Length: 188
Image (cartoon, rainbow, N blue to C red; front, side):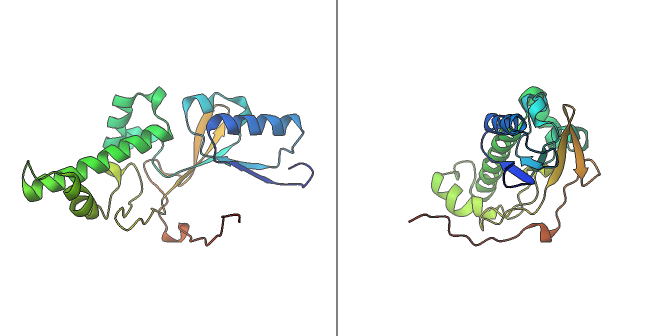
């Protein structure tokens, strides 16, 4: 990065690999003008000095917004603030997805109507506006259409600071945020 004059660094590996990358970049004298982006968002990440200044792009409301969203507040209550990272949010949302599809099966076919087949063929396809109780941007699951919603935060002195959108409890859901990329990533 230093040799090439790179000004953008990203890591989508695990948080430990990002910490290693940032630490090595500092040791090698990579300039302070580099913009760093990763999915790092946990209590441990916030405590890692090597990650200071790193930007994180969340596809869900940050834990700091728990007071603004009842489902996020419930999530933090049961998962615990110290365990509430991006992986816990993903797991919670997946559980909510299953619960909503199961409720659809029971509503349509009674308490014995929930089967693997009905869940996969009839009930998950009803989740065209899934948002995990407002924790994540609205997603069309059966058509695999991701949400354009995000929150951009920056880690500053051990604290995640919301940058955009500025208002707590909101996501930036401009449809222009979603872009399609056509790539051939297979090496022959």
